[in-house]
Length: 392
Image 1: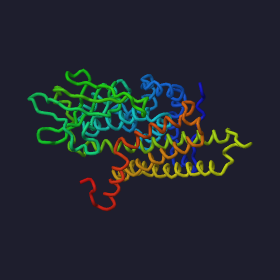
Image 2 (image 1 turned 90 degrees about the horizontal axis):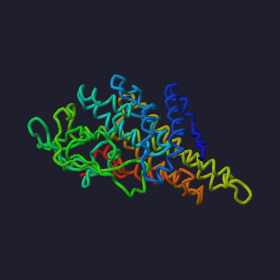
Image 3 (image 1 turned 90 degrees about the vertical axis):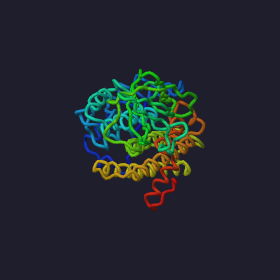
């Protein structure tokens, strides 16, 4: 079994901007990935299986709702701590980070922000330990970038609601115990609904034949006259702004996570370039390879600075949706470009499972699309700087 030799690049001494607690949290996640993820992730991807045995470990390193208050089972950490955990998880694999992102930002976050006290106490502590796993239902077969057009609906039936519709491209759905689902009521208002596995008419068929995120479980959510108790409606916020607020939290985590994938590919390519001998010397001695590596570390460093600043703003409650959107778009594009250049440095070896690069490349093709496509994020920035809405 190949040993995980990863060494994180820190060209601008970013560690000096972190607290001792930040570094302790990050290092614990890093060591867990080296010990419990790296040895099994290639086989899991080849088999297209989600390694469910890692769920307890994810809970132990605080990956499930780290910013949720301790009262509700979370660790009560700040947003930079959350970002650093996501960075380390995606350094291991985007699918592993996706599992944690969904649990934290798309399940625990809406229950914490939009749920009542009873709902928080019922679900959050068990989600934090991984006893319960969740998923998030917004995207539909005919409504991806335009979630406001959703057709999934709830109708008041007296002492309960009836839920009908379908969601797709749902991470965690095949094994999730609960789903936070967004549906329109009779007035066309979007509401958050907590759907529990075992409710009659609720099924979660798995999505197969993926070339990307192969170690992540993806599926659908199908609702056929599902009876939803009224106490399962999120009461504190509705409208499209509610699910979009969750996406802000998820996109923030992705911005950090993408740096992890980029760092892993850079570290792999740098180490390989020093060991691979051609024409009598290491390929690291050739100008074109140095150009690739120098540009990689430059882009990683820029992304680290951008994301750290975003974390500071988020801790202060000043990060805007547009800032988060820009950071997610920039960092995922950066990471995807680095995977491609890293693959070039490794030559034919870059396509094999002996190295992580091709796996990261395939995964990032999903990351650049989910939680808002690459083009949609560009238009969010465009709207913010011009005041002109290109969506309509």
